Each structure stands twice: as structure tokens, then as C-alpha cells.
Length: 127
Image (cartoon, rainbow, N blue to C red):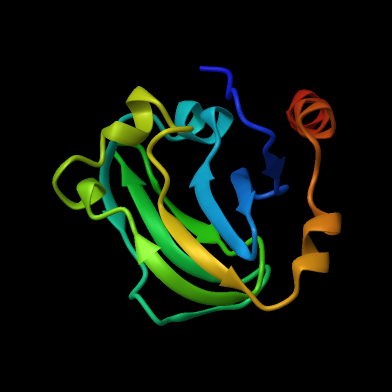
């Protein structure tokens, strides 16, 4: 499950794909492995305000629940409604099963995110 896109990463284990002024957000493979079998995704409301580094929604697994932290500030434009009926899609391929799309307030916030190599190093040293 290695992404084939040029992604950015947060230290809260979200991946971010930038498409113009829109950020597509999901959780990383590392996160879904740590969570285990995901049984529910609490999606944010469309139009909801995302504040960088604040909880915006949550995922629940058989082991625990975890907040999804907004990696960027902006407005939620779209959510992946397929996760309502099939939250396990995140376990199957977390880089396809995105959670939300955010219209970014400030595109320069991307600079605070990690590259793939930086994220891999962060994960190796987290334990």
C-alpha cells in the first residue's frame, strides 16, 4: 500500500493530496494498521470549518477511537460518503479511501507538512 501520488503528511498520521486550492485528506497506512479493523467513520459536515491542528471528525475501530485532526485550515467541500456503509475501505487501501476534501484558506500551510521520507522517519522514531 505505497501511494503513487505526491502526498504530504501530518504528524497526526493524515495524508494530504493537494489539487490546486483543494486538499484531499485521508489517514495513512501506518494509522490504519495501528487502529486495526475500522468499523465506523464519523464524517464532518459539508461546509464545516476545518481549523488546522484541531479535531474535525473521528474513526472507530474494534480496538479504539481516534480523532482525525485537520492538517490544514479551510472549509469542508466534500466527504467520502462511501465510508458510511463501508468504513473498512480505509483498511483495504487508505490511500484510495479518502475522508474529506478541504478548500484551503492558506495554501502556504502545506509547507508545515512532512514529505514521504520525513513522515517515514517520523513513524520509525515514534515508537
